[in-house]
Length: 175
Length: 175
DNA sequence: ACCGTCATGTAATCGGTTACATGATTCT
DNA sequence: AGAATCATGTAACCGATTACATGACGGT
Image 1 (cartoon, each protein chain N blue to C red):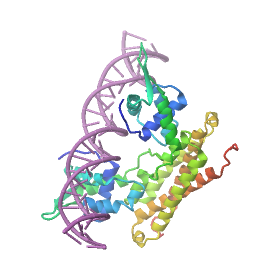
Image 2 (cartoon, chains in turn purple, red, orange, brown; image 1 turned 60 degrees about the vertical axis):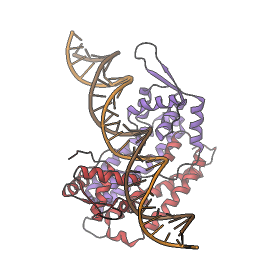
Image 3 (tube, rainbow over the protein chains, first blue to last red; image 1 turned 180 degrees about the horizontal axis):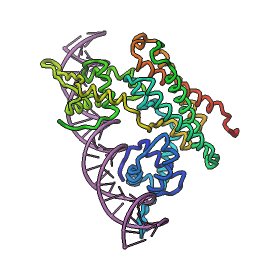
Image 4 (cartoon, rainbow over the protein chains, first blue to last red; image 1 turned 135 degrees about the vertical axis):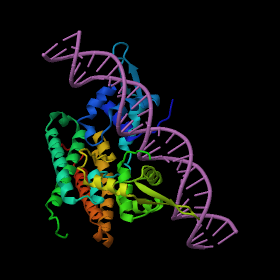
């Protein structure tokens, strides 16, 4: 049995399997889009590679369909369940980063006014999407995703505040 | 001359060289820590590899010291200057993500109350650092970094708000 | 029957992370 | 002068991104 190190991607897969019970990579792809994918995107090719990796290390089981598409179905093992639980329980890493290309450009001298316009549009859109999403009843039963969404909304509001401020700042005025 | 694709890391290097005029990888490392590194970290090994990559593609020049340490000194070429400017000018990518492990854990069912305690401590600290940093006079002359820092402060405040709210939420009560 | 689009998957490449390694300085 | 720490750099591995490829299916 191979040893692997668990990355955030790994935990996303484990977490989704824990929610879904059993899933094919394609299922995972569907779930990611529109949920976790909003604040932690994962390209679909990873959703094929990662479960295979996890299977090799015993965190999930892999069953292949006999006929037809011969899809692979994955499910958590006890080991996987434990790894996920440890991760959620353990105190979180001290490090995090904003890692926003917009802010990076700002840092390196992009014109604040025009950048702000651009960014403001993007983030307003995103905020609207989130607010729409928060209406969905499905979320009522899922406290984790709902809270994560609330966090996302908070940050988008902050973005909108920030970029609005910049957009309104007079171009040449000091301060 | 090799072709390379420019990643965010590339632009950080180009941007820093544009600010510093000329620098060795070690210089870059020093500058990154305490400035951009706060919201876009780059391991120091990348600060050796990336300038070399950029040199191979003509974005920067590479001069090696004759004696002693034989350090490599890098500086922007005209091509590099243009690439940087295009990047700052161009409309920004539509996509960005929060990518915060804390929120990820929240999504996948970590206990909100205890996670919040932990996260609250982390983000309060970070916020304090930022606020201290914003006192430095050096920033007065650097509009980009100053604005980026303001953005960082805004987001840390938002984090503090969010996690405080969760921390105070009664454990068993609904809502 | 054909075409377009969605479903499903694999391959190759490369940037990034982690770990290791050695030359300078400084302090005692 | 020895030890500890900082400065400076390289190597290897691996996850992630990008691109490509084929099968199924619904519509006309």
